[in-house]
Amino acid sequence: MFLVFNKDKIYTYGISIITVIMLFCVANVMLSYNQESITTSSGTTKLLPVYRVATDEKKVALTINCAW
Image (cartoon, rainbow, N blue to C red; front, top):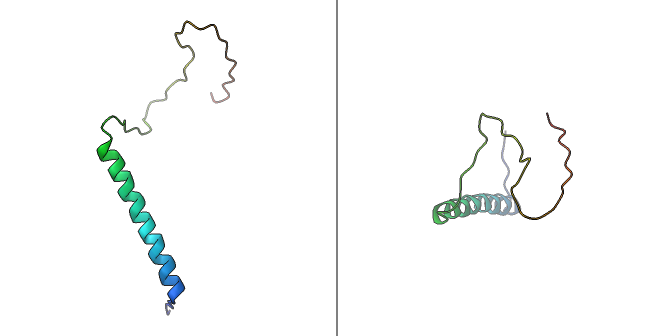
């Protein structure tokens, strides 16, 4: 099997690799400089949705919970 590279393919691969590296660098900088950020991940326990919020405002919300 022969790999054929021309100038357009090299530019395309180079720009793609540089873009991915830059995105990882930006994500790393955002995590390291923002000390108030909270790292979250999916846990093993199932969390229930918010059914009630304590507030002084008189508002009504109609919701439909289809995922049981």
